[in-house]
Amino acid sequence: MSVRPTMSGNGKSSSAITAGRVSTCLSGLSTTRRHILRAGLTGVASLGLMSLLPGMALSLTNQPDTAFELRPEDHALLREIEDYLNSLTTMQSRFIQINPDGMPVEGTISMRRPGEMRVEYDPPNPNLLVANGTFLIVVDKQLEESTHLPLNLTPAYFFLRENVSFTEGLTVLGLEQAAGLVRVQVALDDDLGAGSVLVTLQERPLTLRQWTVIDGQDARTRVTLVDSRFGLPLDDDLFTYIDKPRDRTR
Image 1 (cartoon, rainbow, N blue to C red):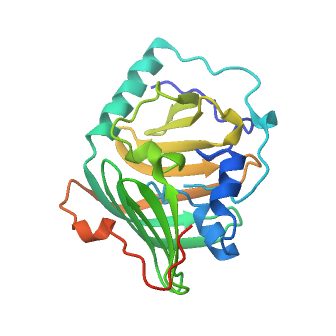
Image 2: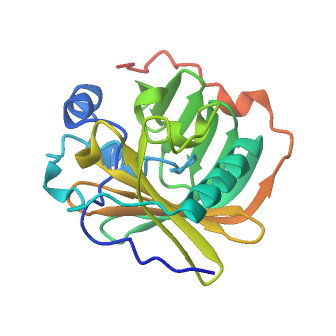
C-alpha cells in the first residue's frame, strides 16, 4: 500500500456551482435552508453528499500551486473506484453530518442511481432534499416552501449521474491510500476555485463511507454514512415530491 499525502489546505473548496450560479439559484432562501444546503450530499444524500454555497465569494487563490500528477498505478485505482461507484444501484443509510460550525445533524439518505436521492433530516430539523432525476428539490416542511435547482448544477450530481468518471469534466486534486481507506478529491475542470469534494471509501472491499464538501474558504461539511445497505429495493415515492398549495417554487 502506498501513501501519498496530497490533501493539503490549498485548493480545497467545494461546490459544483459557480458563485454566480449560486447567487441566482439561492437568492431568497432562509438562513436555515442555506445552512442545510451547505451539506450538499447529503448531503449528502447523495451524496449527502452537497454544498450549494449561498452567495459566498469564491476565489481562485485557493487553487493548488502545482498540478497533481497521477502515477500509472493511480489511474488503475481511479478506474477501480469508478467501476465501484457505477456499480451502485441503490443505497439507504443513516448519516451524521458535521457542518462547518461543528454542529452535528443526523438523518437518513436513500439513493437510486441514476438521478434519484432523498435526504431526510431528523426532527426538529424540517428540511428535506429530493432529487428526482431532473431537479434537486429543497423543501422546508415547516414553512411549506420548496426550491427547485437543476440537478446537474449541484455536487450531488457527481454521485447520481449515469456514468461517474474522473476524466469527464473533473480534475483530480488528490489521491491517497492509508489505514485501509482510499480518499480522492475532485473539482470541476473549468472552475477549480469553486470548490471540491473529498470522497472517502473503505479500501477492501471498496465501500463508500464518507464525503466532505470543502468551500473556497476551506469551510468543510462532512457526511459520514452509518449502517449502510446497498442493492435493496426502494419505493418510488421516496423520490417524488409534489408541491403543496403554499409551496413557493424558485
